[in-house]
Image (tube, rainbow, N blue to C red; front, side, top):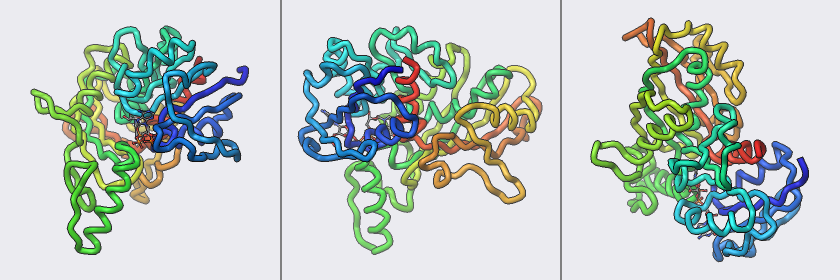
Length: 333
Ligand SMILES: NC(=O)c1ccc[n+]([C@@H]2O[C@H](COP(=O)([O-])OP(=O)(O)OC[C@H]3O[C@@H](n4cnc5c(N)ncnc54)[C@H](OP(=O)(O)O)[C@@H]3O)[C@@H](O)[C@H]2O)c1
C-alpha cells in the first residue's frame, strides 16, 4: 500500500493516543500524520515513531489532502465534521456512536464482516467496544454453530469513558483510602471500591444506551435480525480493559468444550486463557495493552448442557474495542 496521509481527530484523548501506537505496531503505511484536537491541546507534542508531532486545533479545513481520518472525539464532533471530511475526499473511520446504526454506513469488525467495508460511501463506523469484545468471543463459535441467544453481563473499565473517568477512578479510590470526602464529576456515583449500572441514559424498557448498542449493533454486524441479546452493562472500578460473562445458547446442539476451545484458539485476535488447574482465566490486567481478546471459562451451561455454553472474555477496549479495530478497518481500504 502506498503511504497515506492520516489524521487523528481527538489525538489527545484516551483512544487518540492509542491510535499512534497501533499505527506504529501494525506498520501502517503512514506518509504524514496529522494530530487534531481542541484549542486546549493545540501546540502539545506527541510522539510517533520517535518523532514529535505538534497537535493542531481541528477546523473544517483540517482534512485537505488527508486520505484517512480516524475520528475519536465524541459523536457530536463526528456529526459536525463528517461533511468537511468527506468533501475533502477523505475516508472517515469513526469511533463514536454517531453513524453506527445509519443505513448505508458499514459497521465493521475486520475479523467478522470485512466485506461490508467495501460498500462504504465515505464513512465506516467502528462498533461499540462492548459489542466488539463480545462478538470476538462469540463469532468463532457462531460461525460453525448458529446461535439463538446471548445473555451477557459486562464488567466495564473506567477507560471506556475516557481520560477524565480514569482520573476520577484514581482520585475517588485515593479519597476512600485517605478517608476523605469525594464528589464525583464525570461519573454519576463514587467509583472507588464501588460498581454501578452503566452511566448512559435508561430507556423506556429499562435498558441503558450501552445495552441497546449491544443488542442493535450485533444484529447489524452479523446481518441477523433474529439473534437475541439480553445484556446488563456495569461499570467496575478497573482502569483499563472490559470483561464480559456470556451465556451462549445455540440453535442446535452446543459444541463440546474441547471443540469450542479449538474454534476460539484458531480465530485471529483471540487467545484462549482457560487453565482450570491453576484457576487462571481472562483478567483485565492481563488483557490491558494486548491486541488479542482473552477468552476462557469455557464450560457447559449446567441448566441446559446440550444447548448452551458459558464463556468469560477480557479485552482492551481502547485497543480492540476502539483504536486497533479502527486501524484494522483503515487497512482494509
Ligand atoms: N474510551 C473508549 O474505550 C472508547 C471506545 C470506543 C469508542 N470511544 C469513543 O471515542 C470517542 C473519544 O473517547 P475517549 O475515551 O478517547 O475520550 P477522551 O479521553 O475524553 O478524549 C476526547 C478527545 O476528543 C477531543 N475533542 C473533543 N472535542 C473536540 C472538538 N470539538 N474538536 C476536536 N477534538 C475534540 C479531545 O481533545 P482535547 O484533549 O483537546 O479536549 C480529546 O482528544 C468517544 O466518541 C467515545 O465514545 C471510546
